Length: 455
Image 1 (cartoon, rainbow, N blue to C red):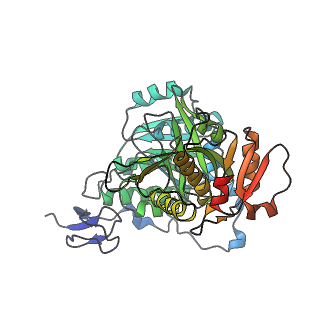
Image 2: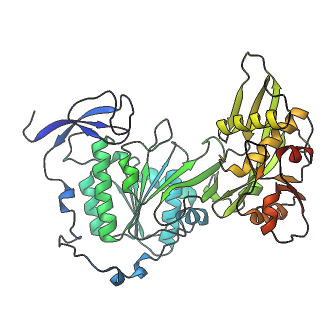
Image 3: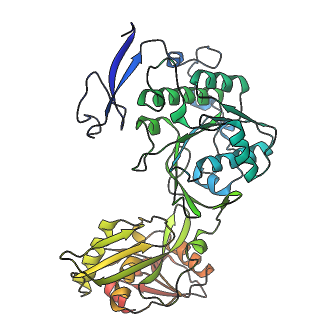
């Protein structure tokens, strides 16, 4: 082995470093995640930590001397993306976008480049996966892009950092982080060491030069960003692009955001000309809802500041097995089992020998407790084989005693239901205290689950 090169073992899940192989990682407790890598002892770009772009030492400053004018957000021209980011892109931020292959990550970022370039701001798009001709073919599909956008195909980390320092763009796109390669680290691209080093270099460039950098990250079969977990800790914002790539809808969700809320979602529709925003997800999610169908109930969930109406479908049938099946798509299966137990114990529904299948139509995943009442009413409707009115909406949290608990922002949910033409709202009685009189819609307050089913 060459002098100055040593062999270490890294955990692929969390990035823990060890001098020997171990079956279980002592940091994240995952099994068989250690890989062997050769690491060079050569001086790395990280040794310039604490220095500015010209190499000078940075000095500490008082907090009152810091100007907030530099933190003015830049709009991307895509309202749904700006909503998820918290109002736009903060200069000097490092944003990671992950998602399944073919979901539309590169298409979304190319549309961002087109909008920013149209505003006469400099954009640098660096790709390690596609040629320049391939990028242009994809760009022609979404529309014409201005001359202030520059393209580069490069995987060498040194060349990438030199180009960014020379061009000084306002926004930079790295597609993808797993293809970036540093010659100072003796391991393959996409390994723990390479991903960590590349992210560290890009983080330094973003903070010292004030450049907003978007990073595209591949995901594993479990849906998490491939590479060390420290990657998500280093960046400012982590966005996940969700949805079935064979369907037309896409959902953008923030799981980490230092400059905004993580509760907001953005909804897109994939078309031939790229991604199109869906400004009213409720109308989109309820499109195609069957009329007077047993087991179908509309519920309302709050995604950040936006109320989203969703259709909950339930199917109950006699089991052909010794143990009844409980299947849930789009919500927590354990929560569904809890609600079935409450229905059987508190409402007298004999569900112990029946299979129960729950589905949230539209492919969106909802975990807010406010959809409990909708799920329970859908199961009861399927059990009795009686349809609930098409103009009825229900929301509320269900407790183990069968009580209906209050939820937040009830008035906004009611106004969203009224806007879409619903006539009746079944809601917790505890929420009636803070709701002003709303004309044109009937409110039915309930205290228990049994009362809601009777209504």
